[in-house]
Image 1 (cartoon, rainbow, N blue to C red):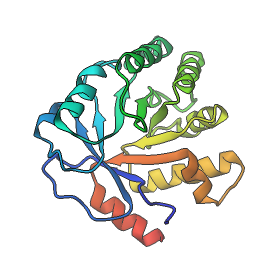
Image 2 (cartoon, rainbow, N blue to C red):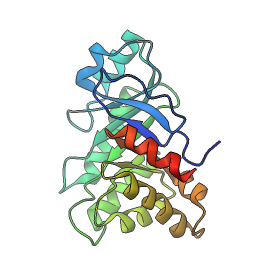
Image 3 (cartoon, helix red, strand yellow):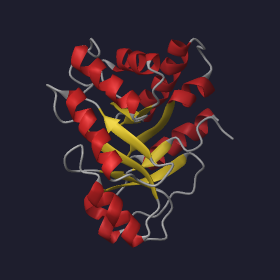
Image 4 (cartoon, helix red, strand yellow):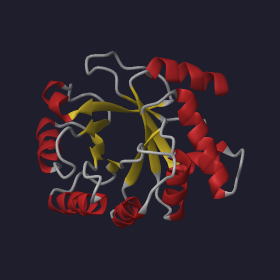
Amino acid sequence: MSTWDGFVDDLRPAGSAPLDSPYVGLRAVHDTSLPDVDPGRAGLRVVLTGGAAQVAGPVALCERRGLALGALDTTLRDPVDPAGNARRVGAALADSPPPDGTRVHVRVPADSGPSGPSGPGLAALDELSMIEAVVALPADAPSLEPWLDAALDRELTVSLVGGTVGQAVDAVRVAARLWGDPGDVAVGRRFVVSWLTDDTAAAVAHLEGLA
C-alpha cells in the first residue's frame, strides 16, 4: 500500500463520476443530497449541515436507503462552549449510533488565530477523546501546528478540511515531526487519516507525483 492510499475524501458535486484512484477514500456528500445518492455507491462521508448533534436523521436515512455510511462529519458551532457542544455530539451518537466502523469527524473552531487552542478548545479536545472522534482541522489554519500538537498529545486522530493539497501533505509531515519521527510520512498518516477536498483530480495528480 502507498502512504497516501485513501487519503483524499472526495467532495465534488454529487453527480460527478467516480475517480478511480487508490488515493481516493470516501465519497463525501452533504446530508441534504442523500435522497439523490445512488445506493450502489461505495462508502460515504456524510457532511451534516445542521447542528453538531443532528445525527439521528442522516443515520436513519442512510439505513433506509441502503447507503454505505463510512463517516459522519459535523461541526462544533459554539465558540464559547465547544466542550458542551462536543458533549451533545457524544449524546446524539449514543442515542442514534451509526454502524460499527463509522468514523465521526468533528470540526473544531481552529481557524481564529495563530496561537492554537485555549482552555475551551482544549476542553473540547478532551471531550472528543472520550468518544474517540476524529478531530477535523482546516488545512490552511494559521494555528494548525499547535492544534495538531494538542490532538496528538491526547492520541486523537485528525482529518484535514479545505486548503490545498500542498498544505495537507505538509500537515502530515508536521504530525510525523511532532510525534518524534520527522520525515516518516507513514507515521504522520497514522494520525492524519484523511483530507476533504472538492479539487480531487488535482489532489490525486499531486499525490501521484509524490509516489
